[in-house]
Picture (tube, rainbow, N blue to C red):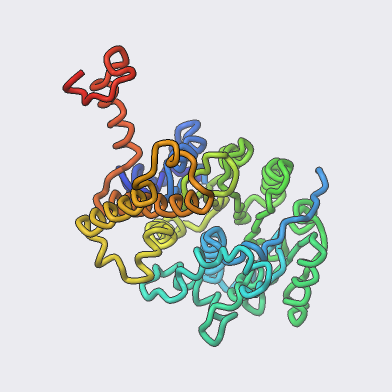
Length: 434
């Protein structure tokens, strides 16, 4: 049995953001330490970055989730780049393969639609890659596949997982797609209406329907399991579905997409998948922002691949640092405008000082009472100025390779020593005058 020792690929710098290998990946007979997979969540809790880990290689839905609102976002970039890598590897042999999608969605999405326009999540996803000329090879292949749906060069449409799989499919390959949402299923059928011989669409529960397709006649398959995780039940069903699939077809390649959320069941899912006992697996995660303080909202996503191609880890290790750098909103904002040339420490420090001055302007000449009781429009203006201060501060720390959180924690310790409670309570004197 092939086993891989745990590896972590963290694309946040130590001490700031960036990328480095903090553990090596080795193919051998050793199993990773117990609990390592769950510990990866702690790594991501510190902020934007990517984690690449290797290991031993129902309640009725209300059907409220619509992927059109999220098409082309950062989670799609990771999911679809990985998916195309899997299918590209399968295409190395002439033997046919099956692509099975348990939650296929609508097939293809117009980015100028009301749904996509409402959130415009693609702006911080595929749009950040669209005009770049320095894409790593896996992302260049991914963008080329998306470009097939945008022949005039403008990014107007985003293909879902089945449509992208179709760009890799050959005459002998087959797609089996499941979707329960009535509107999305209707769109899915329209998308593949001319491909009835190679593509079968069914309005069915993909978790349950997968059982009847394994093993496929070709004995080669990529199975994408990516439910919306609207319900807690979805997390359990993903694990049960993968367990059953491996019993029926242990040599299949399974790709499970999952969100990075603060909720306990989401945090526990990767470890539960790793404990299923697959011969080999790979877990890659991308976090694009800090976990929300209130615990709500997705701050990243992951792909857990069972029986991954042997070439996949190396290709992802080459891709992930670039992807993190590009999808980091602050860095991406500067890079898209070619402003990095101006973001020297001196310039950023001066800009930070200037923005702090603009905050002060709102309080100049106010009494203490007036400054604590701002009019709503003034308070909103102050909030935006504070945001500018924060953005310049974070950018300056990034350029100087300073971990702000670690520095702040260290400074708190120093200040606690300088200002002991028994001497500093109720006093504003500097520490050397206490």
